[in-house]
Length: 350
Image (tube, rainbow, N blue to C red; front, side, top):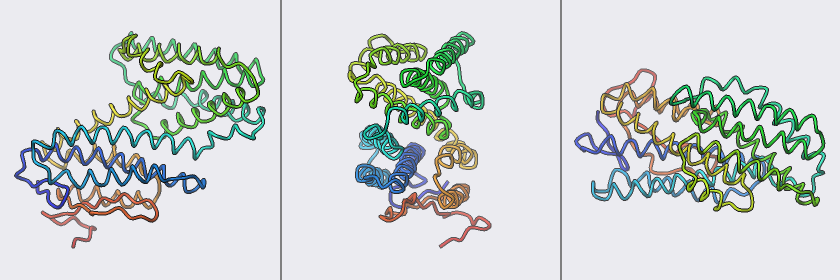
């Protein structure tokens, strides 16, 4: 494999696959940020924070091929931190774009209707995500199914109760189920993660509206905290870890839920990149399939789909060249991968 250009390793670099894995991690973060920026622009929101994170990601990517092996370990830690910050920026951006702050000025009935509608639609569609589920053993799967059944009952009870209180109960049950699904394999599905964000936004807006109107949400918060505890225990987390996460978000356990999903998503991305790295070591052709899954699944638009098709084709040619710059205009992936070893039919080469 021949890999060259600023920000990318040469073929004689013993850490070439490690560097390539880092590039892949940053590319994933870059596409997520670009999706969030596009959503903010469509909604008229402020994209400054997400754009700053995008610039940081781009600068880190350009350093990967030039740092020494000794400095590479430190850079990896910096990349992990930057990706985590980017995920926070993406979450905040998508929440803002979807109107999580709509509680102000919106009637409680409208907020309840929106939250209940999204909750019911998600619980109705739940079976379509079964293919994403991953369990270590039958006991873990059975425990997950029991939590799912309990949440279905809670959702149905909320619908039967009616009113904002019932809608919040139903929406909280659906959101808890979405989080449970996400951390048991659903992180692999960007479409599911978008629905998790949408449920979080509508549920948070209803909760905020109820607080605004002087209604008590303490029981809802208690249920959210207990649900998070059950989910985290199912993932092998200790009570001390759970308590620490809840303590970090004392005002709203939903924020702790969001943080746990982000942690799991980062862990999933790391596992995917380790898989890519192993396949790169066996040859670029076997790496392509995993790279397509990690990167193509996050493409936000037909334009980026076309661009990513070019990326995958050129990966098969096993050459990589840094584009050195991300355009300041409409979001674009900012990555150019160029063949330097063999031509690929249908791909223009400089």
